[in-house]
Amino acid sequence: MRKILVAGNWKMNNDVEASLKLTENLKELSKEFDQNVDVIICPPFVSLYSVKQALNGTSIKIGAQNMHFEDRGAYTGEISPLMLKELGVEYVIIGHSERRQYFNETDETVNKKLKSALKYGLKPILCVGETLEQRESGIEKQTVKNQIVKAFEDIDLSDAEKMVVAYEPIWAIGTGKTATSQQANDMAAFIRLAIADTYDRELSEKITILYGGSVKLDNANEILSQSDIDGALVGGASLKAVEFSEIINYSK
Ligand code: 13P
View (cartoon, protein in one colour):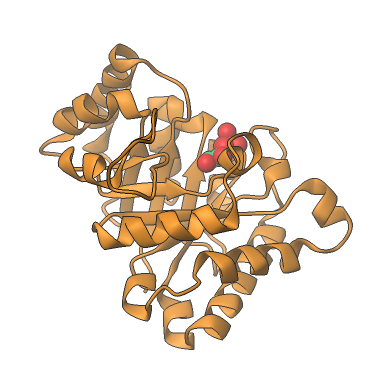
C-alpha cells in the first residue's frame, strides 16, 4: 500500500520570520495530523535552516524548491545539493512548471538535477504537466510521457524507486481551476504506465504520484481518494496552517 504524502510548496512566499510563524502554527496542529500521511514543507532557501531547526522533534519533513546539478563552482546565485544536505533537507522539488516557464528549466536540466539529487541522497519530487493549449489539442498525455521519459533517462531502477512524481497541469496552478478528479486520476494512471514502460510494473505500482494545482480543503478529499493519486503538492493553501492541516487530515 502506498502511503499518502502531502507536500506544501511555499514558492516565493514568507520571509524567515513569517516562515517560523507558519512552522510554529503547523507544529501545534501536527499533534492532530493523521499518522498515515507523510507531511513535507518546502520553504524558500533562506528559511530552510531556521525551519529545519524549528521542526526538530516533529514528523514534518523539509524540502527545497530547486537546486543546481553541480555540487560546487562558479554558478553565481545557485544552491548545490551538498548545501541542502548540510541543512538536513530530505526532499527537493525538481522541474516545477514555474521553473520551466520562467527560468529556462529544460528536460535536460531536470534529468541532470534528478541524477545529482539522487547521488547526494535527496529525494526528488519531479513535476510534470501540460499547458492548457496542449490539453486542448489533445497532446497532454504525449507531453507528460515525454517529460517522464526524458526525466528518468539513465536513472537506475534502485534510484528511480526513491522518486516522487507530481502531476501538475499548468492550467490548474494558482488559477483556482482544478483538474477534475477523473482527469487527475487518468493522468496519474497514465504516468504509472509510462513508468512501467521505462522500468517495470512493480516500480510503477510502488511509486508515489501526487496531484498539484489548486488543491484546497474543499477538493482535497475527492482528489486524494482517487485510486492512482497518493497525495498532493499544495501551493497557495499550504501558506495557511489551518487549511493545510485540514488537507492533511482530509480523511478524518
Ligand atoms: P496552487 O496550489 O497554488 O495552485 O499551486 C500548485 C503548485 O504549483 C504546487 O507546486
